[in-house]
Image (cartoon, rainbow, N blue to C red; front, side, top):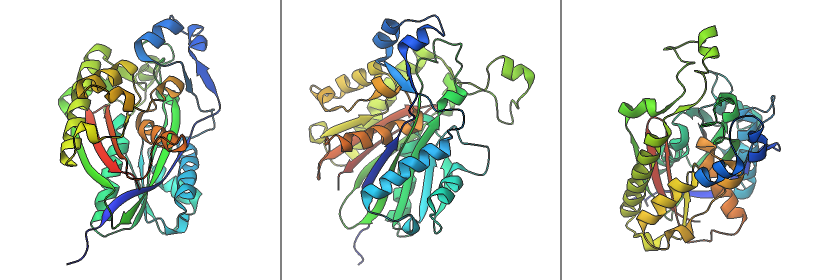
Length: 330
């Protein structure tokens, strides 16, 4: 019998634009205050890409750093999975553009759109390809330019979002890496968090642009409640599927959307869990699919993860969609 093939993270990288948009800056743009934003979200600032700085460019920068971290040449990458809801264009995919920029000539690739849960969806897809034996090395990237779909006149949403990218190298291993993955969607709740226009349902018109329908729309109070419940369930099930308990988790890297959501999930998971949570949302805000890989890369750079650690990742986003995953760090 052939030995079981596992999928392990062997490298991480991230990139964030230079421009910083602070809460004080937003006070000059909409009717809000620094205190209101911080107490309700935990966000102090976010990064904003320049006009010519594209999702594919940010994803490429993060991918290069991940490849360097893993000691992997672009020519050996066999697949590129990009989680994004802000691709450069409808097609070709962002993955194709990143493949060309990296010179990863042997790699196939495609985009996966599942909003804030997108990275975990893409990670599961890449792991499945590796565990089946079809490929041995993949790049999994989360990259977003949410500033391009943010309504900068809406104080309820413009304070939340930022731009950035994160990436991991996933490789075949004879030792466990990805221990479990739990994914879910509920399309009956799609209207709670969406970009209404831009697809075939509402193609661009003067009216859709006037009404900001190409921007993020969110039912905040309802979304908050569902986010806490689904992230909690996803975390609990991912831990159980890995054959672990909450006490076995060394670090939790949640989707960086809102401090109150993270605190509520951590509190319900158990006493002391919040002490194991890695946070950077105060500096980046919600970067959607880029959120978890960006935070994961920063946690690695800060020395928060060591070999053998059990790391829990959990996310919630539009769809509605959610995911949880546990990895053993290699």
